Length: 515
Image 1 (cartoon, rainbow, N blue to C red):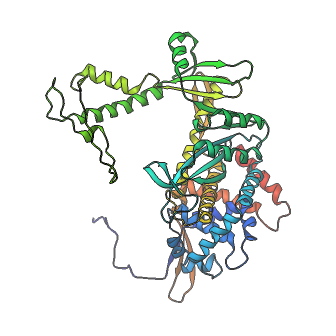
Image 2 (cartoon, rainbow, N blue to C red):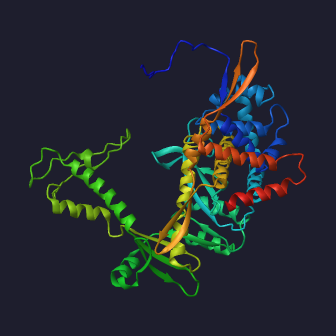
Image 3 (tube, rainbow, N blue to C red):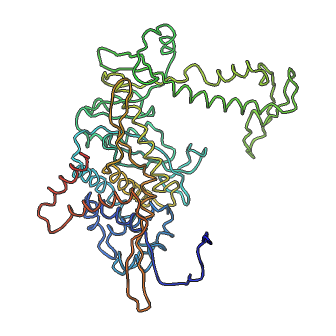
């Protein structure tokens, strides 16, 4: 018996059949309509293809991995997309460019619409917010927002942005671009008031140490809000750890803490020590030690001064205006060939504060709760990573402030679409036991897996010899099948003939979240 191990090629002939990414296009369209964003966009562009259609399709294109608006226009020039989704009209690159400018002109109105849409679906009661920022390299002509600053690749032409995310549910709702050379403190000073008007009094803002400045913390408390941030450790912290080890209390798996509360203000400092952080720091130090040992030439003789090049120690900047002469004096104080010296070098690279971190809160929280809230801040870092990679704006190809604003707003909408459907998924429930307490954890797919599964779900338009059309949906998987079920429930709520549309929407969300 012969087992076929390859596809046959005899019947492969060119034809007029077309396949498009049904999963992503339907998800973007349905969720944006559920949020009320599509209705908001319809009135912002009077000629040609409606702005809501353009935004839905460009968001789907970005989630497919595209980043070039030229290629996006070519993708939208497909006969099937133009006929089925655009009413036969062409969406050119010029149309997309103009749409970015329109989005920029209505930036604040759309941000307000996003907040209103999230509240309509989820009926937000807790308005605790997590804030963080990042940067995006700019490819193309510079504008007033792009500037040279320190980024992931050193000094580069970039745009910075700040992102606001609800702590629960974890949904992004605000984004704001800033010049590439603006300091973190200036960005927070401008961005925080945008959040205050949407937050209930007494809500908490969770930020990193970029916001750990006295005036910024005062701005938050003066607005009637609370904060949880991370402070740098200082010498008094070192002394307290050394002199009062008995003050440590066990607060969780491999974590202990010293709590220092100021009675008059209620401000509380937490000095946490995490075994996981310590081991992670040790691994980094081991890698650094290996790089340091490589500096010593392989031909060095044990006990003698190593042959070290200047370039191994000092990075010389090539500047045609300066004549720089550098002399190095090398003295070996430890040997990488001695195991005890090697261990001492690793300890020195780790530093005395390895494994420690110090959050600060404006109110006294139990250390367990402060730790949980601070650790949950990692979600906004995952969200920013998703915006850069999944939504694919790892670099901005823009030429004006308007296109920068529009591109970031599109990225926010695309990420919000993915976050909403993940939030509404049932996930897999797992019972866990920690510190003698049993709890249920719901495991859901990440943004990258949800988008990948949706991109696999396609609709194919097949044509026979007479031109008759048949439609085939392909590549159903567990993730995209569950999301399609969520979209079906959403579309029932969006039925224009239903006089109980908003009641159905509330029931739909309530039932979903109960599950």
